[in-house]
Image (cartoon, rainbow, N blue to C red; front, side, top):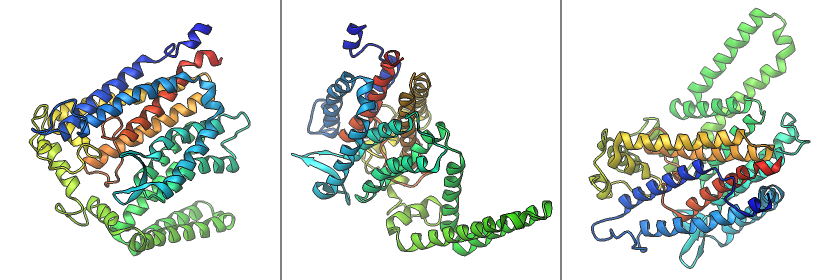
Length: 425
């Protein structure tokens, strides 16, 4: 038993590791296709972006070994400390960080940038698992829900100050974790309803949406009174509160949209909702990505034969818009294969999470799958034009050392927890 404990590879789920390797390799192939040209096409040219990505991939190996070196008890015991240290790094980047593309999100070390928000996701998942795995913790109590919300949204607050709103949205994925552990669906329903009201308000205006909403509420109340004459007597404060909250929320949306949200962000929503069409300005990236995707057809144009990819028609094609490269060169078949592999990857993590012998491992596992799921759905939705552009990388595909290392750290901590489940009995 002791010898097995000293072997860091004992108990590793190799199915998950193989899926990880497949995604890494295919991701790099598409980064090569999106960033190479006739002059810079040597695989081991480390001055190129695909060459640098090879370095990030190679350096992921010692990160994996380092993560596997510690047992599950280490991550459970020190999760809170790791979380606090990561928060300090988020605060520090606001003071000492380098501004890139309008956001102070990076530490710069001799030309190498590290984005602490990419690593914060793993440590937030650990801290949340630590909190909720306590035997005295009852998610049904409001005070305990508040504790969970603080852990989730404290890093989101500091990331918003950078500002990096795309990374902020990732933290809403933790509601899937809370729901798995018994949180009522009310929060998710309210969240979905709030998003719907937001989209309707910016599409049709405050007055129209407010009138329709209050009319629907009034219709429901009249129906309830008709069915039960005493309804209004016992629910008068709920009725008043519903009118007030709905009105304040809709009016607030209108005010924030008109006076707080920056113009380029409003333009993205307006393009998404079809209020304006701008294929040469703010909507250029999405428009070009859609053309690139459609040009791939059923089977694709072939590796390095995508003329739109090779012609650099899509800005940021090796980062946020990498999926358009997949679609052009590998077509519907290739892009479907990528989605299937991601789906297998996610279902495998869910399967392993459900098999965990302790609550900490299960909760962390659901944190991992929620983060990956949110990234995949939002990035692909953004590229194909059904979601606004918000700058979220596609795991293992988008160029960047911080995102690759962050996802690797997130995944292999769970792989270590899963490998040690037999010793945690």
